[in-house]
Length: 271
Image (cartoon, rainbow, N blue to C red; front, side):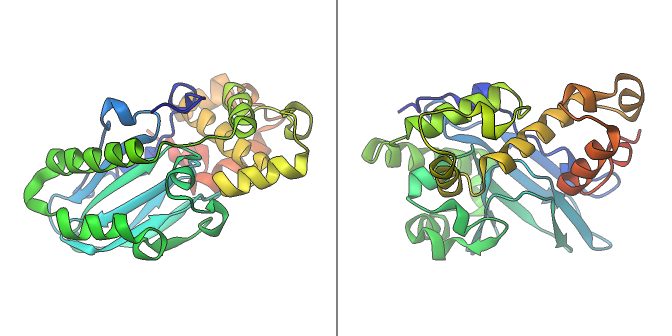
């Protein structure tokens, strides 16, 4: 049960805005079963440790992934968030206990035979996209299991699913993905993605399995690479990571960063 390109080895999407200073919110990520490492990047948990005194604008940065999420206290209302090329904010208040499944790029559409472009930039009810999985979460997942119990339950579901219907990958897509990820998104997609298909065909493949064009996906990969380099505001001033990420000037870097993060680099990494 392995994909022909190891996306996990080449790409590690991060959500650095998960922790909100001063807010009683806990976030953690757990690895899936070893048989699922090529498919699911992580399971995640986001919960309040006490009731919020004021509404929280929870920010999700662009990472090229598709996520399923639900509140374990109301599993009848599970959702799916498609590929997003900008940051997204969710207003949260009171108490909540969300659990999510973050699929590596291309994986969810291949597993569930869904056109990723139909989900791009949107949050939809999971019942409308894949009713069997929504029904499984609704009937089997509950808070008494705890995070480890929920993880094991979901692991079993996806392992059985893959045994029954292995993922059939497209070599042309895999080759283009490998080129983009190995370059950290720093390439000219019109020149460097020579995979034996026309640019129009490749664009269709990316829209089907990623949710947008090779150019947009590369832009997000480059942004994610910048997140790992720009670890602090002082680093931004002294090391100028925008040069190491293929940007010609700082202004262009800041514009793209703010669009995908929701804050400037200096604001994001303020000590």
